[in-house]
Length: 235
Image (tube, rainbow, N blue to C red; front, top):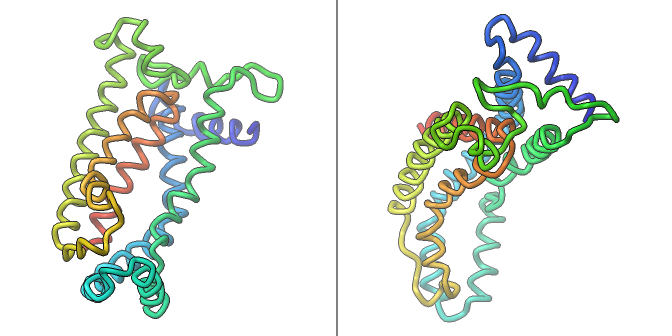
């Protein structure tokens, strides 16, 4: 972790002439962009997989209708279809899984008071008036919701809410274009879960509220990157 802390400090020093007291926050945004750039090839592959999966929907609908009374047979045939067409239903999970270590490392870095037995100097860095190691609930005690630190988080909440609305609208539009599954082929509760899925993007608001501000910056930057990336790859 000390190596990572040194990397963040070095990036902050490089960015200080441009961002001054918020240089460490800018370093986190840059670090997030570098991580997303590294996993971009996998994101492109995942987008191709989603398009291939969408192309399979008529065949999947036919399988659901044919094997509506035999869920086990339906699952087997769907697996065979994905294998035959070389489409993995889990391909879209890889970019998120590979980002997880970077996020948790950043979370741990800004949640620790010491690094290698020394005081964690990164906790002194701020984004405007808000300390990067502070959480929203803690910052409320310093001026309340409309205080200097609270306003920083409100700005992040506004950005995340806007991105979540875009993601939700895109997901609902994509679901509307897919053929409706056969009722008898559905697992119990699957239909309700599918309808709720587009709204899960708003859960990001909860994450931003409970993690240190540095980790919240990672989430917001990564979410914005995902929205732009999906818009680009869906063309």
